[in-house]
Length: 115
Length: 115
Image (spheres, rainbow over the protein chains, first blue to last red):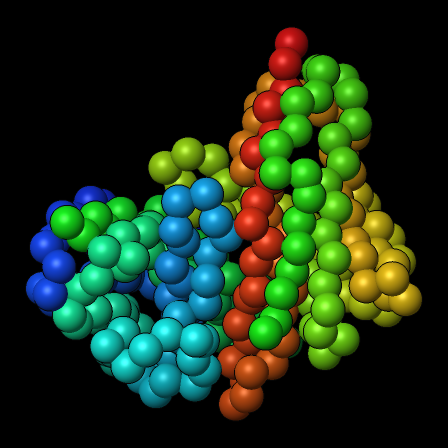
């Protein structure tokens, strides 16, 4: 068990609404990454947070935003939801310390459906 | 556009057989190549990883073969078991700046091991 938890498990929203997804990192991990996994596809990198600052972003529009808190938990916020935002959203945490490609431990994900 | 191409999309192997999944990449800046295993309802879990200065890495029944000149790498699962039935993703990582290591995933291979 990786220790990364996400909430909620499932979520249904309508187009145009806003959503907040939450992630609790594994103890001792100070870096968190978010990925979007569409059905039948591999995860796509959204962004990464290190010590409460965004330090890397994939090809996602600004309506995807995030936060990391002092206890290293994290939120993913998506505004103005579109149908194509329906996906499994994965959070991954990385151990602290100097690291080169430290292993990313994934949570079970939040399944978002946009109607 | 960073891309990792994975094949086959699905694979059926007899118990005890060898499962082989292939991936190809284009960006020569990638410097870390992990394989992830994902069961239904779970997040991806790291299986094995390799760096480009090594041509092969073996851990138990799992082996990565890496061909830097061809920009290809593959996962071999020896003595495949029904418990290995899952979706496998190859990935490649690059430092996207400020110590941020984003993973670029292939589209996945659904492996079914039949008794």
